[in-house]
Image 1: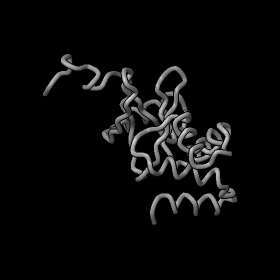
Image 2: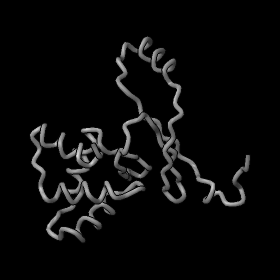
Image 3: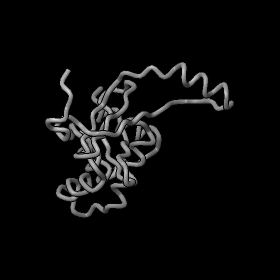
Length: 147
């Protein structure tokens, strides 16, 4: 089942109404191949559905993130961006502090660290999120190290 149809199905199963506003926001997110800020989602959604409000966009993004259908990236200065999860594989983010580009990566070997932290603190760890902030090769320009 395509991701968008699966999201719609889960929303209905959990008792959420599939309002025109939610459909538009979901459409904007599902057509994007890059992370979008709430302002960018609003701008695109507003072109399609002029009655949509910014608060509705934020609430819809929050709901989709809580349900695990979109990735939420924190890129400093309290800025966030969102991307539809096309697959539900575990991944993390590299965030460029120069141009705000977000690159997904899947390499993650934190199981031993999680075990040690859980044991020493008595905390049950359910999941983790890793975001590295730095500069991408384009922003580094000539300073970029070529391997």
